[in-house]
Structure formats: C-alpha cells, structure tokens
Image 1 (cartoon, rainbow, N blue to C red):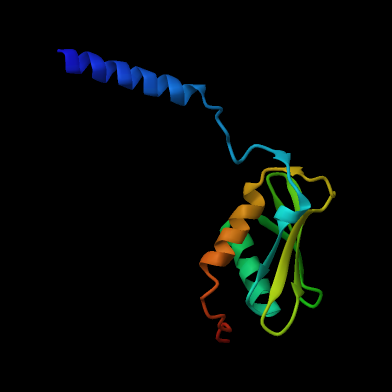
Image 2 (cartoon, rainbow, N blue to C red):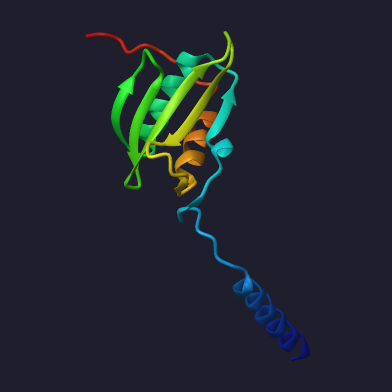
Length: 133
C-alpha cells in the first residue's frame, strides 16, 4: 500500500512538473534571424536547386514562380510568400537562402527547417533526368 502511495505521489509530481513547462508549438509565428534562413551544402548548385524544388513540392507548398537560370523559386507557405535562392559557391558547394518575400522575418520556423531537413535527408540521392516519351 505504501508503494502505491509513493507511486501516485511521484506520478502527480511528474505531471505537475510537465504542466508547468511552457508549451511550444513550432508552427507558431515568431521572429526569425536571417542567419537561420541560410544553409551551405556540399553539392552542386544544380543538385541543390532540384532538391529545393522537390522539398517545396513534398511540403505541399504552392510554387508560384521558378527561375532556373537565376536559381530562385518563389513559393507560398502558410499564407506567406518566400523566395528560395540557390547560390553556387564553387564546383562542389552551394548555398540555399530562404527569405520571406515581404522581408518581414516573423513567420513559422518550420517552413525553413522542414525544407532544410528534406534536402539533408535526400542529399545522397542521384538526380536523374526523366525519360522522354
């Protein structure tokens, strides 16, 4: 019986401690630093551009405009427009910068982090051209 009382006491204490912590929803808008919107990758600019397009599609964001020559993609996520710019650094590395089109860095950080995570998860994949019919 004593063990049951101790167990219940520990359970209530643990729940009270968890409830006291603030709940953080990563989908909540917040101020984001510009530095957290930039990431360097060890891959060619072309591969990063294609992976960025695939990441935007996989995240179910709406693609508004694609400029492959200049290396940017304009897309809409959570009711806000973003610009994904791919910059070639050298032969084997490139940089991706995702910025809000209105230059207001108050948005949900998952927009940027999910794109970066998708690219990192698929970085080892080979880019293959689609066969023409």
